[in-house]
Length: 310
Image (cartoon, rainbow, N blue to C red):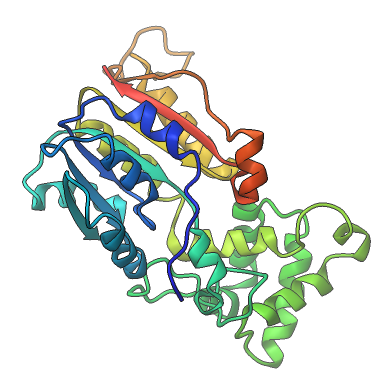
């Protein structure tokens, strides 16, 4: 399947993060290369983009898309949580900007074989990096009821988590749940019909939760942000696009803490944390325009936050 992804908040991201036309930038979620291509158009032949993605298909698509860029382009197949090692291997200590476009790509959702979508049938997979061993099949069929319930409740914010897990457990005792279609059928049976009539697709929250677990999407965010900020030049910027409240909360809280001189609990009268302000917020959170949402409905929940190294 040809790699296809519609870049969200492309102009807003680049206009806020690009501060040095001769600088070095890291696109930590390269995807199909949409943000990197827009960034490359603003860089001189002295500029450099490092594109990082754990999805091999994304890497190949982006390399082709940026083939004619005048700036230097380096692609790295890795997880952005390893940003310290990625920069070290490329002999880079400081950069001028980082870009993050979190979540799942349109290509991954639309390719049923990847197992991300409740709309397209395929094997339960959901791995962004297919070199990893843990799959959605493993989570659904081998996790304990309590563990699975916690994941769906906490990562999916699903009010019917307990009932969904009860139905999953009964189904998997008969035979393993192997496909996205089978899982959707179980979820629909678990959620009362009155609740299914309103709101999003009944499987949306559960699929989100399982995907987050398979790819450890939330567990790596705070440290990755801290590591990136440590590698920013003064005046360099970091932009992050989130798509749901859980990841946005982590990003917002991390940026808030790193913009303070002290993060001691309020009940401590004297600062003992030795924490020093590292960033400042650049404007308010940015959301897609009504026109962009109309053209790309998947953009409707996107939020862009940008900070600058002080």
